[in-house]
Image 1 (cartoon, rainbow, N blue to C red):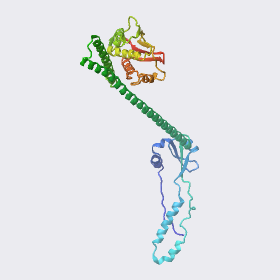
Image 2 (image 1 turned 120 degrees about the vertical axis):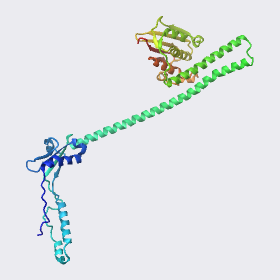
Image 3 (image 1 turned 90 degrees about the horizontal axis):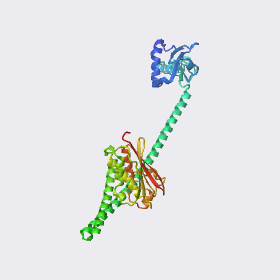
Image 4 (image 1 turned 180 degrees about the horizontal axis):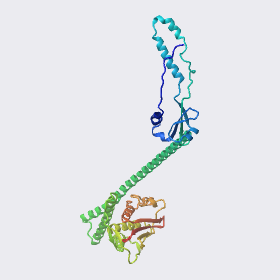
Length: 401
């Protein structure tokens, strides 16, 4: 029988393996996930001596998820290596020994090894157990988490799409309202300018000679001029409010005086309306800009006159509370349908009936009222019913508050 090719004897340092080599392997193969697993290495002696463990070895040894041999002898690899070396040695034999080499080619391998595919179980055994209880449970838990995250992302994308569509529709409505506003303002501006131009033409041509006619034309020019100034002021005030510039000079203000001056405007005195007034003799002082607050009241009064319908009645009422003063303007006009109430304070918004009846307006009155009152720390509310009138209430905090 041929002699062995050689022997190698390796002496292993158990302390080095336990303290350096095995921890380095754990770090290399598990990395940041080492905290998720319990690992135990035991010898294959009858007592199963624990060589290395990342935690208590009891549960891991009793219910491991994975086991693997360490220091096992791979018979197939060893056989292939010995065969290759044996053939290499024979290939270097001299030519004169060819018959002998031919005989050696048929010789069996130098060692009797287990059949191909056999594998020793190893001198050490590795036990791995997931800390979640089992690897299958950990995988199932990870799958559930991934599903939940996926559904959450899908829900977020759906909500984003809905919000995007809603924003697009709102932008479309706002663009349409702005176009209607431009058309309405153009029409509203054309009317007083045409009247003023016609009156001036008649004056310059000498068609107006009678004193009564001159007075009538003068009143008409003044009326249309006030109407034109009012529209320009509304547009400028709305532009200033949209730019969020500080524009109100808040100061202690006599609220009763502001209400009286708003009701003394030519818009009301020349309208022929029956105006019912219910004001206490004394109202608390409020912190307000008198001009802006009077403008808000005039907008509400003008709005009540425009939508009064066949009724020519208004009521202005003020009530003082503990912390706020409420001013209510009521009418018995056409009212506002319930479907339109949430939109009446939006810029450029005009109700369907108002557009159908071609009632003059640009949709800025109530929007400006809301901006002015909110800038004063108050709020405006509306109660209305179609065909039975409306009631707008301004609530302003008192000066002490």
